[in-house]
Amino acid sequence: MTLALPRAFIKKSDVHSLHLYLVASQGFDLPHYFELMTVDDVPVFYYDSNMKGTIPVPEWLNNTMGQQYWDFLVDTAEIDQDQIVKGLKSATQQFNVTGASIYQAYGGCDLHPDGTAQAFLTHAFNGKDFVSLDIETRTFIAAVPQAVLYKRLRERDQTNLELLDYFYRTNCVEGIKEFLRHAPSLRMKRVPEVRLFEKKNSFTEITCHVTGFYPQTVQVQWFGSDMQPVVERIIEGEVLPNGDGSYQTRKSVVIPAEHTDIHHYSCVVQHSSISGNITKAWDVHSFSGIMVASHGFDLPEYFQVFSVDDVPVLYYDSNMKSPPPVPEWMTSTAARQMWSYYAHRAIVNKRVITAGLMSAREQFNLTGASTNIYQSQTRCDLHPNGTVRAFLTHAFNGKDFVSFDMKTKTFTATVPQAVFYKRKREENQADLEIVANFYRTWGIEGLKMFLQHNPRLQMKKVSEVRIFEKKNSAFTEITCHVTGFYPRTVQVQWFESDMQPVVEGVIEGEVLPNGDGTYQIRKSVVIPAEHTDIHHYSCVVQHSSMPGNITKTWGKIVLSRDE
Image 1 (cartoon, rainbow, N blue to C red):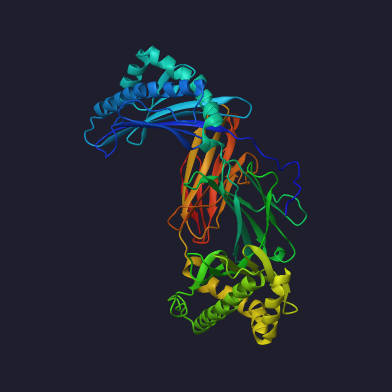
Image 2 (cartoon, helix red, strand yellow; image 1 turned 60 degrees about the vertical axis):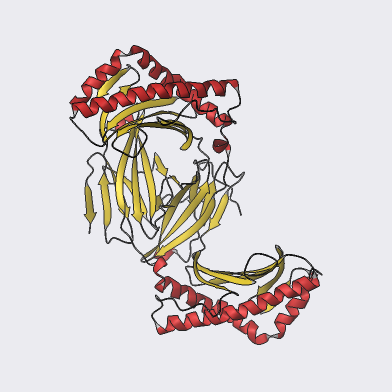
């Protein structure tokens, strides 16, 4: 399903970046010096003081200009090493520090769609600002008195200052274009995966989670039943890296309780990897299962996985000597009885799905084939108004075979070869009653049971909130980074000094996994230069792990909790 989008919902062009990380250290288990260059967060060049000989040109940089640029990077890496190591020596002497110390430089440029670029270069010693380069005047600015000596040392070397000026004004942008043109990792495109999650109390909050996409620019928008963009009660996230070169983001909408039964919402995602858009309707809670019987594969002859809201909750296969044991967290008698029913049903499922495989092989005359696979997929969705929608389908070797009609309690054969299996199943009316009753009663009760008892669906962890700032001559971008929270649904909102929500200049991210079971999200606001002195901004975070909220004020770094 796709939606025709309003004019207001159009893609923004990418802002491409080239960033350099230069590090000199002593007392750490690191090379004495190393540097890393990234383009759009993807590493493209690395050098360290332990490397011997020349750094070979990548095969994909197979043109004269590309090779010349690579040679330039290799040559300047040694110059960078000399300058950054001098910074480390100067800082340790001026601060009278011995032992482990680290000196870092961070520089680069951002290329905007209109062709303009902004560049920057800052240095830090042991995690604190040391000097920064004013590219316009070719002078260093000392952040602390101990940096004055290094500032003067660098400014005496006019040749190096001219090299820096050339790099940040010209060469940096050329590098972005060259790498974007040739680097395979920067030309790949990955299609986003989109899922919806729901959180309920006095209101309903639905979150659209978009993950696995590349490049990082993405548009995520909620639409109401009138097909107009939702602009109120929106919780916006930032695009965050997944760690595998792809990105993720989240966007939530808060729905008052009185609206959940009469309003419908859809999350629409646009990305350069797809020609149209991906649309996900609000599906609320789901209980789903996959049952597979196979022949000739390195798999159990039969296995099944049942999930609640895409979280696996029950697994069984034909190699198991007994039904799945009751989990320790199922403490109530009713929950244990429910589990026993599911465990018993797994044995029945094995029988009927294996029978489906045998019937399909015979009817398609494939009993001599080396490999065959029979799959059944089932799903039961519980909607906010209490209605239930369910389906059950079977497939053989990847193509539809039969489906079950819940109302008539009959199977529909998709191909002539499925008629025999359809008739065999319909001879057992008692089992058909059980199947239909599962979707009317047991499936929904099981869904509620898992949501109530499963610790993976109940764990709560409080958020950590920090604010970061990025400045240039035209604007200031402030980012609210929220991390370490669980469950994944969170509300992040920027407010101006008049306590009105910020609706313009907002850059939204999505909730992304941290790898330890918790999540993170970012939300930024872009402030024009003329507003930075007269406006104050606060980031307010709400999460189910806290009775109130966490507020961070830009510039003051003040933390308050509203109880």
